[in-house]
Image 1 (cartoon, rainbow, N blue to C red):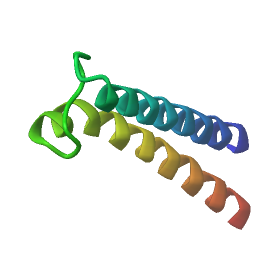
Image 2: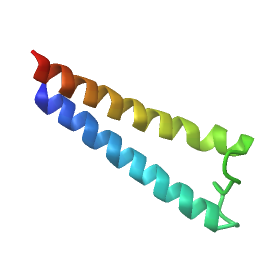
Image 3: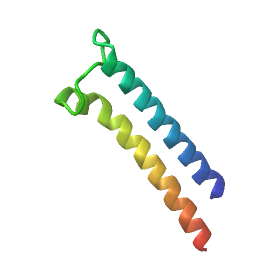
Length: 71
């Protein structure tokens, strides 16, 4: 279970970092296809699912890690 939790935390961190980097790039590049003002309707539709999945993977990995130590 320790390997699974480490893998989930790693995937969650990488996906969150990539989404943040691409979102920052998209906000600075006005002519970019994915550029949208932060927290606008377009932003929520394009970026929130990526952030939500990264946070969910981080949360699941951390919960598995914490409950694995409690056993």
